[in-house]
Image 1: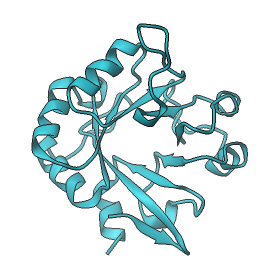
Image 2: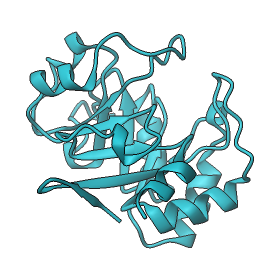
Image 3: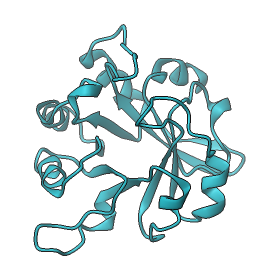
Length: 193
């Protein structure tokens, strides 16, 4: 259910998030959020990390329930976790703070990955053939990063997704290629009407 800002088509990655380590707790259960994500999202984001209410079992369950592309969302600190997510049915895997390599030492295909840098300095090192997620939230503190999406866009001309702190389409930067919406998915869905 992508939308346009001006002439730019923006994809929606709808996140199934029941909680976060930063105090968020959804009033809806996983199944209710998954149903809403399927209605709103071009891509469904399912957490693999239990700190965000996710698991690899939920990822496999989601794959059995939808034909839409699925993003396995998590930090995925090692490449075995990426391979596990793909085996559970993920079309894409989010990786935070690094560009993965497979067990053989070869890079895991860029078309399967979304890379989330921790800083603008990290962003500047990512090759343009990767899809990148700029998260306005600092995953170490839960607070907002000082660097903005606009600054990230100046550095990275490739495919760039805006994530966190998006309540309505009014919060979407016009140069985003996609938005990843989780905690405020209900409110965001209403703003699309």
